[in-house]
Length: 247
Image (cartoon, rainbow, N blue to C red):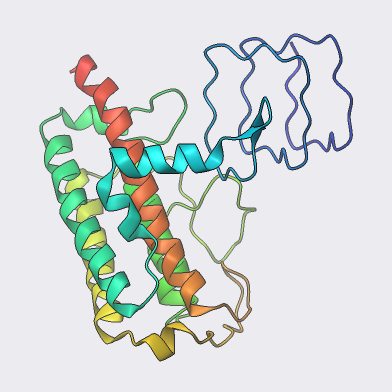
């Protein structure tokens, strides 16, 4: 069957079509209408809002269930400076547990991908990139905060000023050393954060890179890091379940 990659199918009609076993990665399904669907054993994740199934908006139900399963999740929606400090304390505690779990695996498994997702090492490298992009560059104003091991998201266009070495295979300790420095930076930012500063905007960075030269709400920058840390730890825990079965 053909693959549809980087194509615009906006407004297309799919009628009497089998999509059984298909995979959709990074697709925009805003405003999609599906009638007469057979949804069995389907797995859907992403930024989901106003999704109605048989007339029922399921998003509030899903959000409530996720909060029930992960009681710390509600702290990942901080409203003030103190909330950001509390969220970061939680993230550091949870990530330490996840890293301890990963250390019990053979080092080679930490470079293995599960179902095409990033390996554990790649996940940590991406989080270094997130901190560099949204805290060190966008918030603190460093135009070139990158380490050679930074790993941008696959959907980001190549930017000559931003490293993207997909073939690098650093050890867990190498990546954790980078993480420790970035965590210290974020911890310092949150320690000095005030509600007044949180309500402000950043100064544009006039140099090529990511994010592009623009002014951003401070809240957006800091929530980006908190959200990435939370979600990617859940992905890592999910994949560690599989990797442990291979050990």
